[in-house]
Length: 318
Length: 139
Ligand code: B12
Ligand SMILES: Nc1nc2c(ncn2[C@@H]2O[C@H](COP(=O)(O)OP(=O)(O)OP(=O)(O)O)[C@@H](O)[C@H]2O)c(=O)[nH]1
Ligand SMILES: [Mg+2]
Image (tube, rainbow over all chains, first blue to last red; front, side, top):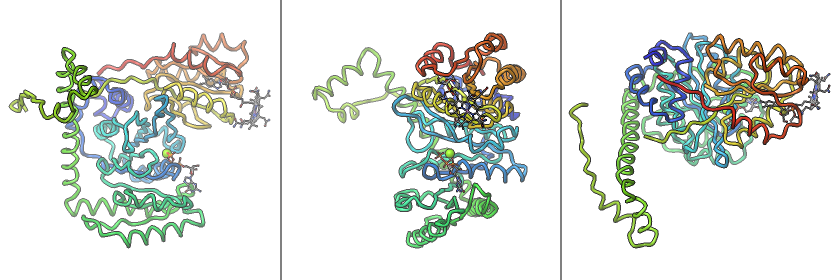
């Protein structure tokens, strides 16, 4: 009762507690999400991705400042990697966001990937839901410093910003290999460095050479300096531009419908997996199957093909 | 459906103008390598910032590193502020340049443990494992 109502009222302490349930995968988290769901869908979600040290956090700090000037309530989800060796993590993105760290209308949450691949954390989408339900207008999501394949953020964000910096050598090449497709906006940060213009030109050439996007959007390239606060106004306009594009083209809604389908399918996969596994694990069937596959008496493909789930779809109560 | 995995979360913070951050960083890294999730907020934190970060990140403990001599102000004030915010179930501990004579008073104020220079990192990790558990949450 108490905690959920408080979240809906925007109480940060209550929200923090619910987020913790989600992060730790505690069963009550699901109850919380059920009750928060009707209050979600209002926030605009901006993804920020790019190589380690590109200045993502510093840029988020600047954007928070701009959105606050507009009177918007802001949430930030900042993700850092979990060490694969120890399972521990150092979450340091807050260091660059100190100016907003006591603003009651800004909520900053650090998440560790906890083994999740793709640049986000398993809890990220649900934590975003909590921020949405607590009334944040804008939610910015900083991914872990990505290589190439970590592009989960597009499925989560309305607008995805790819941040790069001059002087990373082959980095532009690396961007090509998959991140290019996900950027609604390119940001060349550290524009205070002399080589920045060269990076901008390289990006321009690369974009010119790549085929036009299916949705017809042409991603702009922005040179900024998060440190000096230069180019931030233009970046805000570009963000607004993409938002307008989504809204006037009807994509805003269709993408969000896709997102509902995506998250439902993920939940469904989890549920089916859980149902089948718990059945298999009854009476030691699972161990026996594993042993049979290990000794080649059975092959995994046939085992799967022979699975017949007596799965009773009770859709009536839905 | 996914498994429950409760992890201990610790905020490591450097209050005030004290610029000695080696100890804080070494301890943060050691805690990470022991499997804890550490939020490190950098230098020059006001007590307000520390309390706010602890609340948002829902940490189980706050580890203060202080070598400036301001510990007799910092620790009791912080603990009072946490109490006012209803966050008094957060364990407060720390280390740095702190005269042994001051420790009993700090403990009386609610500091769980102080580690002095030269403490082996394993000793800190062992203590955290023993004394810091994920805080309970209920809906
Ligand atoms: C290195 C050093 C510096 C470096 C700091 C570099 C850096 N980025 O950290 C520099 C040269 C910049 C520096 C500057 C100054 N320093 Co200085 N410095 C030291 C010195 C020699 C070592 C500190 C250190 O890094 N130790 C290594 C780390 C790993 O140890 P540690 O921090 O003690 O941490 C251990 C424990 O204390 C504990 N611990 C510490 N933090 C935490 C946190 C948690 C959560 C836990 C669980 C445990 C824990 O665990 C750690 C592992 O055992 C000490 C003397 C000394 N022997 O301690 C003086 C010392 C701390 N400095 C001192 C002074 C006075 C200064 C200056 C004011 C000097 C000046 N007049 O300019 C300036 C102030 C700078 C500032 N802005 O604050 C004094 C402080 C006196 C006091 N508090 O009463 C000391 C004690 C020297 C002295 N004997 O006078 N200093
Ligand atoms: N010269 C210059 N340095 C910058 C700029 N923006 C950020 N930096 C510096 O770059 C370093 C990394 O900045 P962060 O904001 O932490 O970068 P990040 O992309 O969030 O890093 P990770 O989260 O670790 O991947 C810091 O030392 C910043 O001070 C900029 O515009 N110009
Ligand atoms: Mg960062």
